[in-house]
Amino acid sequence: MTSTPLQDNASQPVVSLRRVTRAYGDGHGTVVALDDVTVDIRRGEFTAIMGPSGSGKSTLMNVAAGLDDATSGDVVLGGATLSQLDDNARTTLRRSQVGFVFQAFNLVPTLSVAENIRLPFELAGRRVDAAERQWIDHLVRTLGLADRVGHRPSELSGGQQQRVAIARALASRPAVIFADEPTGNLDSRSSREVLTLLRTAAREYGQTIAMVSHDPVAASYADRILVIADGRLVADHGALSPQQISDLLIGFEVGAA
Ligand SMILES: Nc1ncnc2c1ncn2[C@@H]1O[C@H](COP(=O)(O)OP(=O)(O)OP(=O)(O)O)[C@@H](O)[C@H]1O
Image (tube, rainbow, N blue to C red):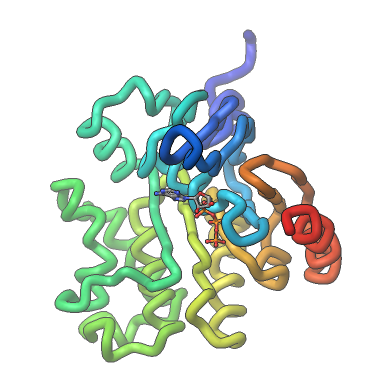
């Protein structure tokens, strides 16, 4: 290969699943939550993962993030094959490479906004350097949190809490952010704000984001739409309108019923 390292890096997927199966239980009670899934999460893209309830979306996210083990197949995250790492190495890799945003915000109630945003650095056992402090200040201002940094999460609205969670996820510039129904607890205005932030993070900061969602409007903010049905990857599209996404999903809801 004659390509430069930069080109290699840019074209390399952040997360690769190769023939990944995840089965729960054994014998007659076995549930195959992921069934032979091969997919790349591409660098700098905002990818939505959709599908009917129970289709395997959260399992895909958990396996891709190294929170859960594949039963077979390989997951490569940030260049490392997860099955070859022990628990400690995997935790270290996850802390340096992955950010999470959850439906329930998952902020620490006893910490201030500023302390919550710095938490990933604390967990990784390192101090925030000058460049990171500037980046965090920029995020806090851009996300409209500047006058809230000393507040506790309970003193914020749901939309503000989710913005803190997004700032926390972006703060360490992880290779990928996994967002699981990040607008599930928000009203439509706060949802739009959060989705716009995620899209901006991908477009302006090159942040790779994979978002699990049921909501066609939420998924319409993404660059790419993956659909999982019955544990299988059944569709892989570029950006679509909410109506196009609804039409796409109806076919699989009927198929899954
Ligand atoms: N720990 C587990 N033990 C047993 N079965 C599980 C476990 N986790 C998930 N499953 C099963 O695997 C399948 C996929 O579940 P998963 O949570 O990934 O679906 P989902 O698409 O995220 O669903 P939803 O949209 O309802 O959150 C389901 O049948 C579920 O019951």
